[in-house]
Structures are given as C-alpha cells and as structure tokens.
Length: 587
Image (tube, rainbow, N blue to C red; front, side):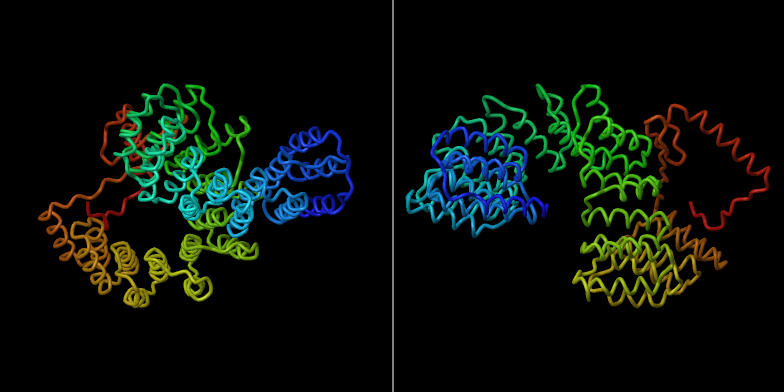
C-alpha cells in the first residue's frame, strides 16, 4: 500500500503545468474506465489524460474520487492530492466534484473536512444543492456515524434545501441504524407531505427504519399498505421480526415470499441462530441448497456458528469445502467463525491451521483462538497466543480476558490468573464483570484456595450471582470443605431456591465427608419441595444429521437398538470388573 501511495503521489506531483485542449471527453472517459481497477490505475489514467493536454471537467473528478474513496489506510492521502487538483482547476464549487469530495471525506470519518467542502461550495449554490447534502449524509452512513447523518439532515432542512427521495432514503437508513425512531417518525411526516410517494425505495426505507428500531407494528402497517413489494421490503420485515424474537412469524412470512435472494435466506438462517435454534438453521441452509440459491460469506458465518453450537464437525467441514468450491470470500468473519467452530468441536489443531492461514486478524480472531485453546485444556498455549496478540498491537477486550482467565484456570496458573485480573483494570482500563470474577473464583477454587475465593467474593463491586456461589460450592465439594460449602449453598439457594444443582453438590459434599445423616436430610428436602433435576442431554452427528439424546428418553426412532447396544456395553464393563461410584449421585 505504501508503494501505491508513493507511486500515486509521484504521478500527481509530476503532472505537467501545460496542456492542450483536444478531445477532453475521451480523456474523461478513459479516467472513468480505469477507476474500477483501483486508485493507482485511476490516478495513472488521470495523469495520462493531463499529459495529453486534456483538461478535466465536472465528470472527471467524480470518477477519480470514487476510486480513491475506496482506498483505506496510508493510501487515503491520495485523496488530499486529488482535492488540490479540484481547487487548481476551479471545480471546488461544482456540485458533482464537491459532492464526490464530501463523500470521500465523510466516508473516511473526517466529518469536519466534508462539511468544510460543502460550506465552501455554498456561496455559489445558496444553501447548497441537494446532491451535496445527500453526499454528506450518505458519506456519514458509510463510516457508521449515523448520528452525524441525522444532524446533517436537520442542518439541511434549516438551510432551506429541498430534500429529495435520495435524501429520505439515506436519512431513514441512518435513523434505523442509529435507533433514532423519534427523528425517523418526523422524517416520515415530511415524506408524507413532500409528495415523493409512491416511491418504492422510500417506502422500503420507511419499513426498514421502523423494523430496525423494533417497532414491528408500524413496519407491518407500512408493509401491508405497499402496492408493490420488492425483496428488500420482505427482507426488512423478516429481519425485524427475527430481531424482536418472532422467529416463527418471520418464517411464515419467508415461506410466502414470491422469490428469495441470498439476503433473505441469510436473514432467516441467522434468525434461527440468534434464537438458539441451531438445528433449524442448518435445515434451512439445506433447503437453501435444494432451492439452488447461492450462499455468501454472511450466510456461511451463520451456518458455521450453528455447527459450532451443535458440535456438528462433519457439517462444519462440509461448509468449509463448500466455500472453497464456490469461491466464497474467506474474510476475517468467516475465519473467526471457523476457528470458533473447530474449537468447540474439539478439533483445536484445525482451528490453529485456520488461524495461521489468516492474513488479516482482528481482536476477535485472537480472542477466538485464545478461548479455543483454553477450553481444550491447552492453557499455556493460550497465554502464549495472548502475548503474541499484544506484540501484534491488538488491544484485548473483556472477552479476551475471559479466555485468558479460563486458560489460567485449566492450567492451574493461580499467580498468572491474579496478575491478568489486576492488569485488566490497571493496564487496560477494563472494568471486570461478574463473569471475570467467576473465572477468578474458579481459578482459586480449583487450586483449593477456598478462603481467598470467599474473600474475593466479599470484595466484588456487584452482587454475586448464582454462578459465582455455584462455582465456589463445586470447589468445596472437590476439596471437601463443608464449612465454606454450606455457606455457599445457603447463598445459592437464597438466590435460586429450586436450584437442583445446589442440592446435588451439597449432598455429594456430605457424602464425601461420610455425613450420611445430612445426605438423608437433603434427599428429604428435595422430595418435599418436588425439585426435579434437569435431565442430561447429549448430541452426536452422523452423516450430517444431528441426533439428540435425553436421559431416559426413548423418542429416537432407533431407541430399541440403542438401548440394546448400551446393555451389551454395560455387561462387558461388569465382566471387566468395573464398579460405578454412586456415592456422589443424588438423582
């Protein structure tokens, strides 16, 4: 990228100061045609145009700036050089050139420069023409500064500039993404008074704004009132229903769509993932393949996430092959999802392979591999990766520290755990959450430092939850500390009186200490309260199909064969001399 900047700058700096007025139209067209090949080619074409004596006009700079706007990082400096040429050739007040400059600066997050360009052009255009304000609003949208988009629209109205359909689409998008429904409703009123309706793009923007803000009643009324609905209309409502937790209603609408594109399929699959209905997500993806719809990288992130949650390694492997075969872009989001999937499926070596092959990594990439190594019992490697992350100048966040603390817990690194916990606040200014305290309690509890763990709970700035007390109680059972264990159980049952785990751990702790009278008392309490233990559940993947099993459940179509095989396994175990330890089982 540095080479691009250097080359582009040398081209701009070397542009001759004399030119000949011939065939300027072909020169402008040449610059426009190469702009799709990147900033370097666009600038090179522009330089050749000037070398041939062709003077740029109002159509030249928009094409050049469009190419330059797409460049990030150090190469963005080329935009300033192009801006200098806009001024040099007297185009700074031209609406087309000024609008392109505004988009370029706003899209890069330089709102001050974008506004300065607009205000510089205003003397020649009064309050500014709509196209320049539209450029400012859409440019802020591209940089994710939706609040500035909304402010710019308000300023546009105050300047007396007439909003267009393009304006309304941009500002409604900003209201939706920024969750500013109040301004969105005011814009809606202006739309109704403006006379731009019926306009499908504006109508879609209104539906999407209300759906993004979570007002599905308003979105639905608008959707039903539309004379013509595009796929964007349907998808906006489906996505809104999914976000509001109405997944079944979203599916019903999805099934009634006259046609579906990749975005609609992805919205439905992701909806199931967000609702924790991972099997249905994969079933919908299979149906998508049956309908010969093409997936993209966003679809595959949702699919791989579902595989991770189900432990469906075989399906996840197939998804990886599918992406390679179809040439789906392996971006950082897909890479992160694959690392997470392989880690959760226990294939940590494949997760490391994906991590090593990724050319671009963000903090989520590092966090995913740290967590993966930690939960797979490779704590020291996870900590080594954490130090590599710091050397790569990637700042850890609160989730990263959860992974690091879990790694310390699994590796028995008590001192390191304390050190990392303190560094969160002292070095990285991250305020520990109850989850971080839970990890620290687990580190201390596993190491048998139960008194220190109890003291740490007493110093927590927030109220300990049931997970905190449950973690301490589990550690007390392992280390046979009835005194602290009873205290932890009291707090746990105070928070959750019907928590079956608390009774089980407490009973097992008494059984380990041969306190059978207390074991019987706990059993009696359970019977009197009618507390039921949540049945255990396990899943296994065979030939791409996820089979789910619950304790004592016989709903599986092959349950007869399964239980017959299980009985044979138990007979073999007994013949081998195995005797199960049932002293710590309560139910």
